[in-house]
Length: 329
Image (tube, rainbow, N blue to C red; front, side, top):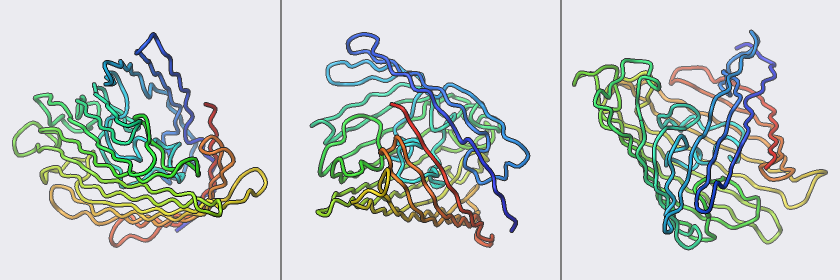
């Protein structure tokens, strides 16, 4: 019901990556973000923006292992390691619900290792996890346990080097990547410090990306992920318990149209949610549209329709969006 025609600056980032000396890299990123970022909220009352430190991490390369320390993305799913700008769509998936301080980040330390130039790679880290700062309720983890996070990726076709990921190479390489990610924090869920109001948080997911350049020059992209989140059936207003999945298909046309190439796509997401072991309904988001790829992820325009049914008996909220993304790397 109703309609909205709003303009929004969703976010803008400044990236800084510096090699301090041999085998030491420092990354410092900031973000200016609309506080109603990509939520579908009606912003007619005026926009407010926050600026904050997004990443601040140092990486030390020691005998083939990369040791990361600071604030950064913990090992998790491909969408989170893509970030909002290296997805194959405009909106970040709603089924991605790992805990974080902000924008998927946390404070901690991690070891990253890859073999065969990224044919197989793994990462494992320990992080601050749930604290009062990231949980509006009384912090359940009174013992200050670490959040453990790990990810394992195998590329059957072309290797994908590096820790960060992308969901489309636009024909630059053929990729078939399968990954498993896992996060766990003892007493990391709940609303208090007693045994009856706290539980362990455990989340895991499997994600798959297949991208193939066809003989006619077109690029077929298929992506899927399954998520499972468990809070020991303990209610937590900042965590979701349940299962979700997403499936996406896109097709980059082979011939240019003006500045770039057209890429039609469809994506479906579904989430079965619980709070305290009680069913809280489902959320299903169906979308389809066209990406106009001018310069890969550095310059693209996206137009899409989205139907969001947030609740088993809720009405579907329909929207049409046009978004633009530009990066200078």
